[in-house]
Image 1: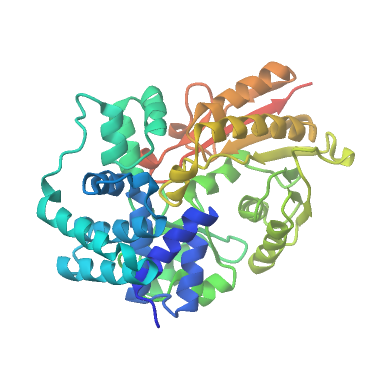
Image 2: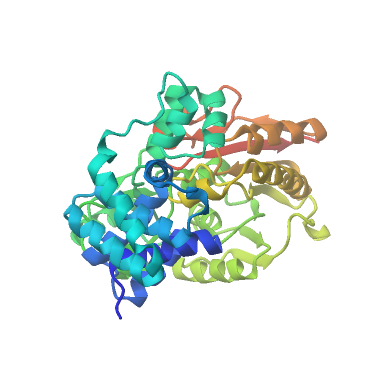
Length: 451
């Protein structure tokens, strides 16, 4: 029996929770397997999955008001049936309310027949009285109000209120719940940004240039043609790469020169290494290291697609240390450190529901080790560049302060002129924020090795 779009959405949400997988590859795999890519049903599936993940806290707060038992102990599959149904009832008008409830009950009958009556009762009770529910008062308990209404974990909201204050925390959480822009990086080894913009417009897309990155293009997802950008020939031919504007700016934080040797010490699938190669016009030396052989394979495949031949990719675990042959060898060493990813919640909303305060302590400990190990590869006079996609000081400023205390031979430098000065704070740290700059939340610091 063919599963409905709502049933597929519930399946994906269950996998996200149980396997700790990210939604994006699961959605893409589902779209391909069910021939839904580029179709209205495919867009609905994506809309439902991401809508529920972004607003799960808001939805769960409502559902607990209509469930007499312990909602935390409810079967996860039934929770997701209820979440998908409630999300449609409250935030989408694509189906009449009776049809939404009926569809939810049908899905429940398939995955947990004994709970279908419960699903029917909760959603119908919401339709009768849910619209008059009041969330916690912002006057009496600001943190609980933001956490429940703006759908973020309470512990994280409390941390952000201390850093940003309540008003900015609301703006940040609101931005995290919005649909992020589809941002591309033009591969300037093959095409200029102006030419790419014209080619995209001719294909029916609505491209706009990014404000801060000279290589970025934003596509208006509401007016894009049916064919996803990844399915187009000019994407397959290596003219473009999907990359958030903040991630693009990290390469301009480094701003490499052709004569310099570069090490990307936590390269992942090579997004930043490939951008650095384009800035260098495919001339020079870039060594890219990652502990995952799978990611190194992805990096090599991507480099070939983009027409890059100056990246030497190899596996290596930076937490253990770099080869002795790397000691003081590179002019620039980039440490794109493993982090919580809490600056990317617009794109990866599942992160906020699986990250804990204990995780942050583990990340911080690992980041200190990784930065220290990477520093051994910097030449005298060279630069060590540290970045994360986190907004929290314990993963950012505190890591730099700790490193400089233990390594007086390094000093903090302000970013080069290639970075807009409005993205640099009074200490010389690079910051981007979803609610301020319409891009992912990133942090960056440049440390020069003096002696």
